[in-house]
Image (cartoon, rainbow, N blue to C red; front, side, top):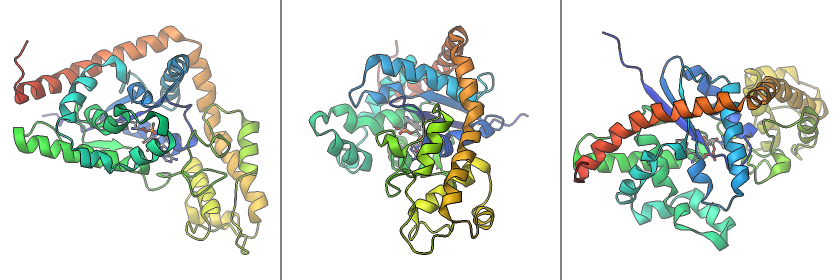
Length: 333
Ligand code: TYM
């Protein structure tokens, strides 16, 4: 008898252009997984509007993100690629989960605290209940693993808590998934502020996947290194956060270990190291950028990919939703 494949799922918000943190954290691992697991990867567009957005930008970035997923190696024949808003079951399940998630739990989410501090004029209900929608995104496909960066771990944990609570009341409805966090690249820091994570909101310290090589090189040459007197390339995130972040980026981009990188740059100082990391990143991103540009010229193909993806996703999501609706007591249609 053929053994059932394990299921894996993840998504990225098209709230900004994809950056090196998204890529070196979770995304670069996804293509390895499509052979072994049944994989669902989506553009989390519903999540973007918790913060005010320009509608045309969301559309452009969503389409670009599909092309980038494929360019990174996600073959649409081997995994399900779709746009979150094309599968209404996510929001339908989210409402049910809203009613099984506690106000206190949501109040403890660090991302909610950070984002509401940054958007004090727009602390909307969506920003608060966002983890319920994310839990719905996950639980509706019954995955075993959810590959994310370190910053999303808390959201996967609340998803597990909600699943356990729901199962405790209604029986085994949801599989309780595990977060999958890679050792190298799980938290890529900003190039010009290495104590904060790399994100689109600090563009000078952030490298975007579609950026020109000369801009990438400029950002790496200006990267903040540490003011210690030692000035050697050594991995020590406490004492040398800037250099350690660059070592992590180099390791993730080239597959080399920290020790090999330290040995390679022994006695060479930061002046040689920073452009070398820049070059490693440029070479790692070049084929992705070129392939994305090629794919973006073929909108018909991309449309066909996301339409097929949404159909396949909706079929699986519908099964879980019907089960949940029945369990909670909604009259079947
Ligand atoms: P988002 O869009 O902020 O980030 C997408 C993924 O990139 C990771 N990431 C990083 N990893 C390492 N270093 C960084 N500097 C860095 N910045 C971002 C994130 O951890 C994430 O894995 N809520 C999610 C999207 C989402 C989702 C889901 C993910 C919605 N539904 C269901 C998994 C499953 C988010 O906002 O990620």
